[in-house]
Amino acid sequence: QVQLVESGGGLVQAGGSLRISCAASGSSFRLRAMSWYRQVSGKQRELVASITSGGRTNYADSVKGRFTISIDGAKNTGYLQMDSLKPDDTAGYYCNVRRVDARGTFDYWGQGTLVTVSS
Image (cartoon, rainbow, N blue to C red; front, side, top):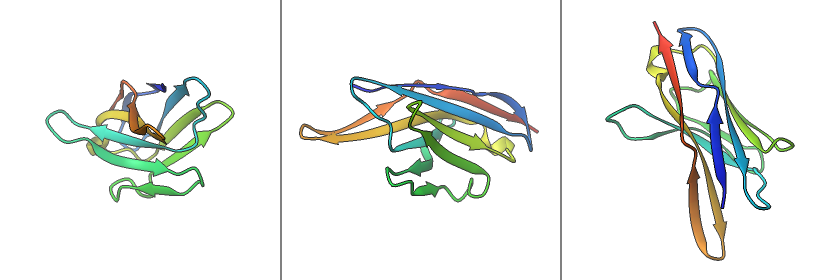
């Protein structure tokens, strides 16, 4: 089992910055790869950024150059640094970990953290 807890969301003005966190825990679990998604009420959840165990990152076109995903292995915590925020970035942000083992593929999600960007 993997538990994910997001934090750091809040209200910020357009052009501002925010860093949200995802603390991972679980028996013998080490956070090495993860993704961040976001969702606006009534719309589908969309992938914002991902990072592989090798450190390769991928970003949605809408956030490229503004958002940075990272992992602090010592803290077992992932981050999403969000700069030059826009009102369109307003959403609930969710971290995701996909774990593959002999039993199959499992997706774990946090409870989400709300980011609101005012114009």
